Length: 220
Figure 1 (cartoon, rainbow, N blue to C red):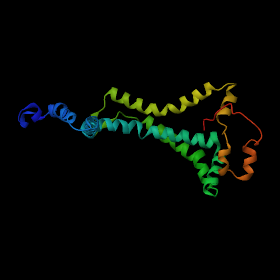
Figure 2: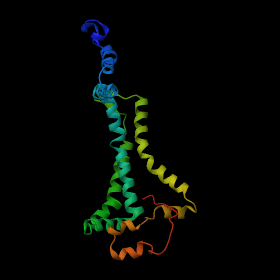
Figure 3: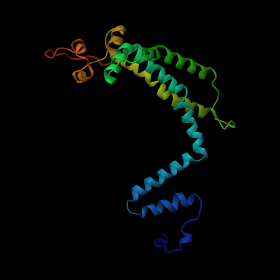
Figure 4: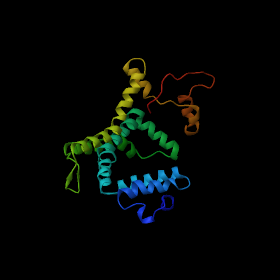
């Protein structure tokens, strides 16, 4: 850059914002594969900002609202409900037995059906009842817009479960009871043969010569 401008190198740029946003970008344009180095340079600036003190404020919002706490408890509760009460704990136990070669202990079914959902709900309600505004190092209290951003992050993953179920129910035809039954009935195909016991094949799969069309899809 000094040779191109015909000045001493000490006069090309001074320290401060001009060095990062004027001198370096100009130098990058003079290098081979300029677009690649420009993208890497500004990515480095982004990561540097996240790693700074200001980045810790943003990181804590993500960590507190969307990566731990009530969000994971909500997800774990509905996962247990779907596996144990919609798909069926006994059916899932049989699936696991086919994969590992032996029947799991009944304790696992009790955990999926009762213990884990109860613990998730209890801790979830404890978090909600004892909720306090987010702070950083017990000194800085996040503003209202920061909390709103955090709850928006949390709800973006929490609401996808009930909204997906509602969307699927609205797409189906027929009475509500029939829609729910269709959506929660697993669809077995011949590609599942390797996981089925011989006595289960005739019960779950249609005959080879029959041509059937599936008119619904399963949420599971």
